[in-house]
Image (cartoon, rainbow, N blue to C red; front, side, top):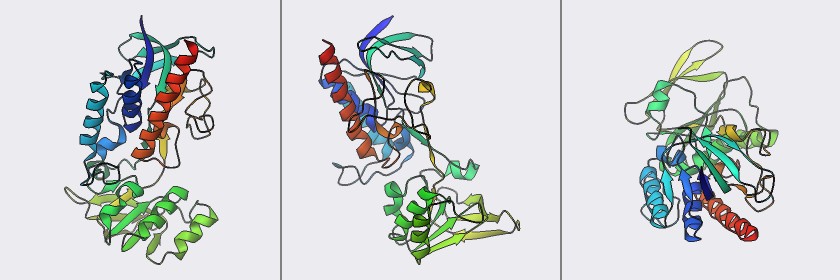
Length: 311
């Protein structure tokens, strides 16, 4: 059975940054990419808000460069995903990890960077245009639609926050709410109602996203009257929530009611010694590449200090 100092699960900004720091600390990290190598940024065409790229960079290229940087310092990057884990509650005890191909690994430390998956509607036209005008992050992509008309899907706090943010950038924001009222908090609803360029459409769902290569509009259906209508937009923001990728850690790690891993204080430590969490898997507030990278750095440093104490 293979034995490691540090195993990193996940390959987004958090995982690769953790790998860079762990490798430089001579922890000889092995990183498993997961089902979506590179994470959510692989579906982002342009990244303009990550420091160090004055002209911007596309998401897939950025992930390739982070991978190359991690490998330059000796990270063993492996394509594949972790199928199961058996975590030990005893300090210094090895954690057991089972890979999809059936191989088993024992490791002193684990850095979890499995991220969170944005929830989408599941329409063929929506999926086809992800990265071509369909986004799940207004803070990430809203800038590209400055002075343009966009739409937001959702009726909760996230949707209200996204719509309010976009209203300061875009000329018009159409907010599509599936029910006859919003479920966002009163405070968030008041922000929406006070924004003059947010147009609310209740009992409304998307029938189809219009456009071949980029979003050009929406066909909307009223789920009460069944009447269909079309609007012209250039950006569609899906704000119906995210799902943290934490299933394999159920009943072993402490999580909140949404499934996000709980970390202790300002650290990346979980309730299990030697297990650390970084990135969107433990962050439901910011969900940015730069904050994920920051916690990846923290996780590697926390893992290094843990190993030093063991030795």
